[in-house]
Length: 157
Image 1 (tube, rainbow, N blue to C red):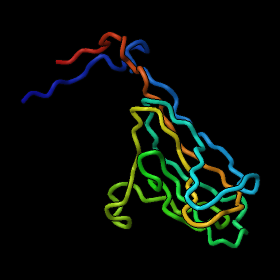
Image 2 (cartoon, one colour):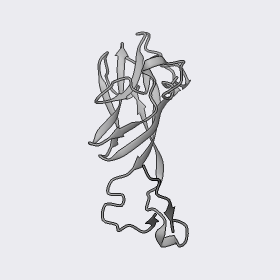
Image 3 (tube, rainbow, N blue to C red):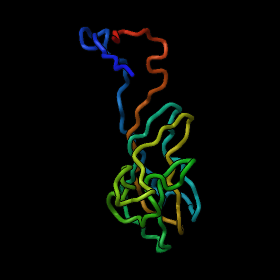
């Protein structure tokens, strides 16, 4: 097995790999503005196809005062609690699942999610109606079309 060394990657700006900016997006959801119930799914942030979600979480701006013992989960179409498992909506940042490899979360830990198809980051009302106000945020990296039509700019030998 051979190891091929890359050369020319820093010799000129034209040889640098292409790339797009990573961005943090957020959206506020005020549950006191609409009727909700256990099991409701609020599709908060649209994630385009070919996007890497590096991290997602929620910040409770106003604690739940509905008295229904309501909890929130944060996930997506494939896993309703991929980022935050059913958590009581008290003021402050909610506990986000640990990064992959962190023994504190065992087999349920996550580190990132790759979206080959468009999806949404969803807030799920896990138990009982809520009237809290939360900010959902995620760090997204768009890799759609990166380098697809480019020629090789470096040498491997």
